[in-house]
Length: 324
Image (cartoon, rainbow, N blue to C red; front, side, top):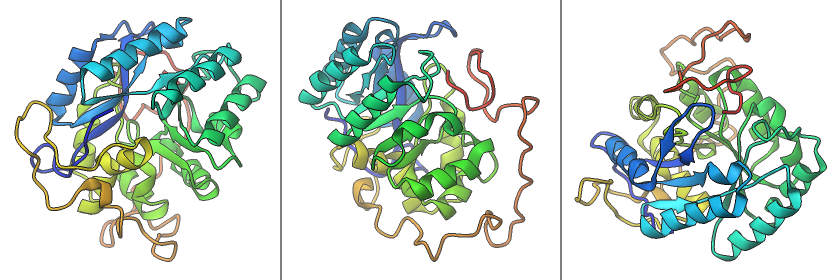
């Protein structure tokens, strides 16, 4: 795990570290990726690296799939391996946590919906407790309004991979109650979504993530680069929070494919000081926009609403923000 984090990615924006890369074949979208293709996608974004999870490990080949992610990270220093767990086999998953944690893996992907595991399942609750007790990060797919209970009250560190712009209120409530809860920005590309969350829960709760190659990465990167966030807030979301959670070295580096040192006066890894608002500075639930901009209308929840971001190829889901 030698990916490095530094400020300055693609010219006018922060460094980007993708917390949500998918290795292998996705069964429902027919997309497929290799380490080389993931690196090419990161290079197109001007990103410095990413956290890679094996899709093979999610489909009844747990150990072999996770070994593929480990091999990709060994071969490509810009990739960092995360484990994938099978919630249908809690004992095998607990053994895999033990095995992978021993070689330095710090994050584990959980797919409750895809593996037909409800939040009430004893195995899921036991796995959540194990990750929390070890100080490991749970990368959780699915509707945040459904998947949160097993991780509550554990001082768990969680990244909600499918947090949606329609559910900002619920995300804010979860973050207020659970200091270790974070969210990926993949579906937070609606008007002022990032700005609202930075002003309320703090930029230190958001991580740049794309679920590439199943979803398009460019709109997610563009939304962050063109946001109304401060430079320090954007740096935290782009890569600084990933450095903190995943233990990445915060040293000067280069964007993939550039061959040149990244520019910037400060390391993203130390940009958190002063970047997030204090509890007194955070705005009320109705004061979301910049001072002179009216707040945008809030979306009406329902199945008729179009998703904020379309998948590169269709992935069946019960409603916006659902599991892939």
